[in-house]
Length: 256
Image (cartoon, rainbow, N blue to C red; front, side, top):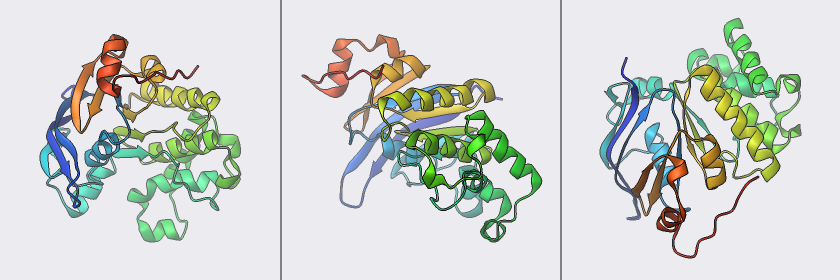
């Protein structure tokens, strides 16, 4: 099996309003890597993640997942591939009235089917997997309370468990700590790193704060105006590179 799980080649995305969000972005992702994407708001980070799992259709270039071009697949094949690429969002996207357990179980939707899921019919293996992943992210004791009774950090941990229940090979995280207070950021990032290390899961994560990037990333890429302007070790982003990525006069904010 190749060490490269994902290959992005000259990826472009232009929206219907004419905005060119991605301009020929190319990079590889190694299996088991924790890759972080940085850049200003509007640099193309979120668009890039959505192109990686086919939520957005690129207008040029291609994305190859496990050797297969996933930018051209449609229908059930596209859904099958998407099930192998889990995603965590900034605002959690849980169903507030559902229990923590039921939210985590919804990650198995692609296996259970829509009708069975709507009826609450899941097999025992999926139920065990959901509880195991809730345990992995330290939230199992809250399994049977409503999701809207949890703090933001706890809800994001449920979202991680839900994505893991999907049984993905890659986990995409779009600004997973942007809605959280600084004290909670590290807790969520620690669990993402735990998932990466203990499960060997490839993680691709959008982040704003370089202090978090330096602590958690194996490698970092930076986007600016839809173009890739940096790729390498996060520790090599010095003051000069920071200004190149974020603009002259920008100040780094640290999350301790």
